[in-house]
Length: 232
Image (cartoon, one colour):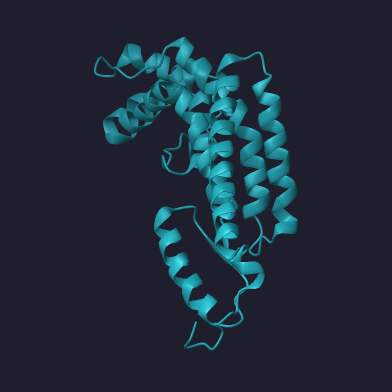
């Protein structure tokens, strides 16, 4: 920033919601405060990435059905592991019939919940095929139970609106607050609706997500209060 000559022109910086970023931000604040160049006593200097916070909130919700999620992940990993297994799986697809194979089955990146949604959505379409594989392949021991498949369906129902809204946010190369604020508000509204849902899986996922969101909000409030006391 010094080399570029913009050290006195920085209003805010957006980073992932990670503790290591807090450290570097505090160092930067110290430097900028010496220059008296921050607006509103640096209250708006560090802005957490909304997409990253949303990821953390949803990950908390997914923890409610982690066993079913892990089993479906192992399902796909098993089939993708060997070419011979892929051949048997394709034969099972032909046996059960009526499977739309255009989408295929995807493996997720566990730290990215939107890829987990895509994985679940694709795996559910092949539910009957995995059942057939359990009969054809004696080494296959990861077949989910009906209850675990039902949890996967509930997880998809929970994740779908978040997936749609996140795509609206990430679809822009310059997602300023006027683009994402309404989507974040809709997500909060959805969580409140899901908490009142009669489906226990969706309700528990929403409660876990809201609990994390509230705890982060309280932490932020404590940090802001501490800064105000320091200013006074």
